[in-house]
Image 1 (cartoon, rainbow, N blue to C red):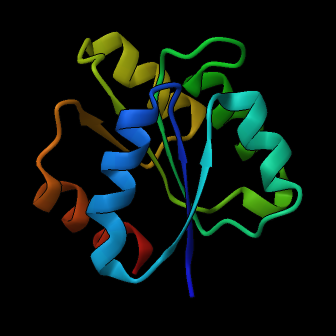
Image 2 (image 1 turned 45 degrees about the vertical axis):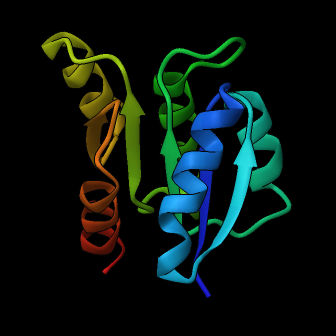
Length: 120
């Protein structure tokens, strides 16, 4: 079974993403920010990451950089799910190593389609 980590400081967003991905039959690990995500990735094998950008502590783009710097996670799909839609933010995310970018509010079927596509 594949494991997807959802990183967002909003409990309602984590719940909504988790509920949306439920039909894919994946295991979900939740983290409240980048630092929490990195700590949990040490004890959970994660196959994909879905992260917000704006979070207290370690933000999403810094998290992507950290994850890409870890050989074990260098190639996992990382989707940024955020209210940020500015082109320069997207470029920053891509440069950090993000696989994709989805702007909130998201369409559940759109998220599922992207997850299916990047997880193979």
